[in-house]
Each structure stands twice: as structure tokens, then as C-alpha cells.
Amino acid sequence: MKSPNISTIIIAVIFAVIAFFVFSTVSATPATIAVFVFLSAFVAPLIPNSTSNSTSSDTDVTSNDDLKTLYVGNLPYRANETAVRELFSSYGNVESVRLMKDKHTGKRRGFGFVEMASNDLDKAIAALNDSEFQQRTLKVREAKERPERIEAEH
Image 1: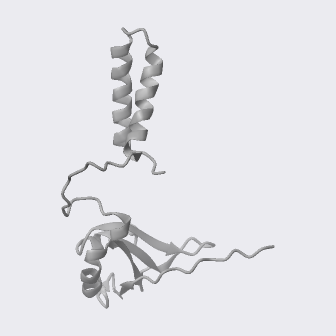
Image 2 (image 1 turned 180 degrees about the vertical axis):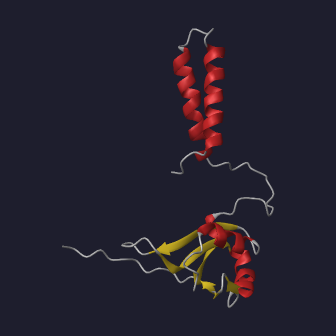
Image 3 (image 1 turned 30 degrees about the vertical axis):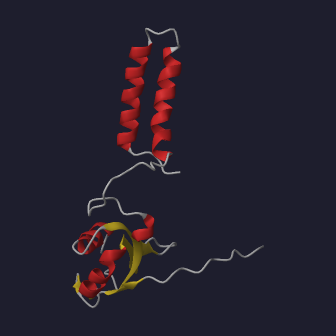
């Protein structure tokens, strides 16, 4: 389950306060109604909206099916997620950036992954593969699927 964003929480609190004052004049317990309204704000986004007639546009949120992951190699060790996001944002909608770190030292390992809209992938690869970024020549390609890890039994 996705955790609610701050706007959902604010809306839920506003509805709960309104419900508390409106229903305080009714015989039902106002606190019960306020709790019901508050919880409904969290449940409502989980209910699929099959009657939606919205048209898709470039500003719509990209679904997980439309996302692809790029491998970005030869990154400068001083590069951070924000700089990499800004670089790739010039070529499409960037969903996430993960720069890999050594688990023992915490230092960056010089490669990472950028998740972006699949229709922007080829444009980003063509523009950024073998391009210079902070005095390093980037290697950009579509990431390979990670094989399932089998946990060793002890």
C-alpha cells in the first residue's frame, strides 16, 4: 500500500474537523463521525475509478508499466542524485535516481540507475551515452533485468 502524501493527510484532517463541527449537532457521536471521515480519505484513493474519462497528457503521472530503467556508468564519484536527475530531466520525465554506494564504506561506486518514462529512453541514451559529465565520459544504456537472488540457507 502506498503511504499517503501530505496533501491527502491535510485534506483528511480538514474533512474530519468539518465533520466534527457539522455532526456535533446530530445525535451521533461527533468523534465517531470525524474518525470515519478521516479514515475514508485514506481508503478513497485505493478504490479504482473505473468511470474516469480523463485524457492522458504529458503532465499525467507515468504508470509503472511505462517506466524503464537506465544503467549509468562511469559517473564521477562526487556526482549526487540531484545533479544526475537534472542532467536526465532535459531528455524526459525522471521518476527516480539511485546512485550505488559501497555498503561498507558508504562511498559512491561510480554507477547508478535512472528510472524514466519508456518513451524518453532512446532520446536520453542517444544524447547522454559517451557524453561528458563532470569530466567523465558517461556510459548510458538500458539496464538489464536483475536475476532473482537465491538466499543461501545456513
